[in-house]
Amino acid sequence: MENQIHYQLKQLEGQYFSNTNSRAGKWLNYKLLEVKQGEIRASVLVREDMTNPNHMLHGGMIAMIMDELCGLAFYSLGTGYYYTTVNLSVDYLDSAPVNTTVEVHSKVMRSGKKIANVECTVFNDEGKIIAHGKSNLVNTEKKVFELRTHHT
Image (cartoon, rainbow, N blue to C red; front, side):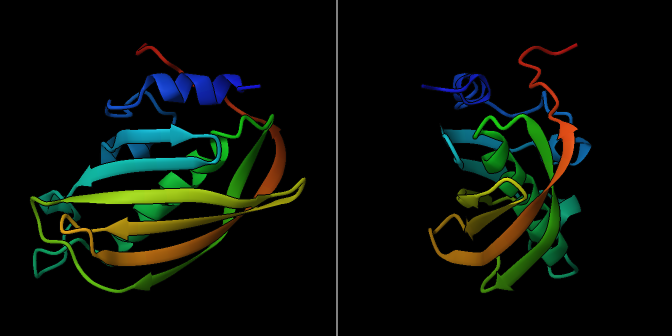
């Protein structure tokens, strides 16, 4: 049976995910391309304010993108509790220049009562992997926030 959060996220496929409680997520302005339970595929336009001095996507921005999309992949499972990142390991493999779009694939590898493990890969506009990461999230035992499907 499909959970409510997954259902609501699925309705937003093809749209920019601006109605998030995450201010970082709003700033990233990512587009949901595909939503499955425990999996998210999204795209992000590399803006000038996301780049390093060489006008390439900054490594810190890649980490923020990964953290945001790992969290959303986990959130799509519909758990009743909020999990937060305890670590994020990133391998930087290539780059993406300003004004190109990166595609991000995040997938929950394991979801337990206390810890969840999520994997994330970022591709440049040529389909080449520019970064790969893994994250562990821990259960805060706080009730999860509700997805807002309408702007307020």
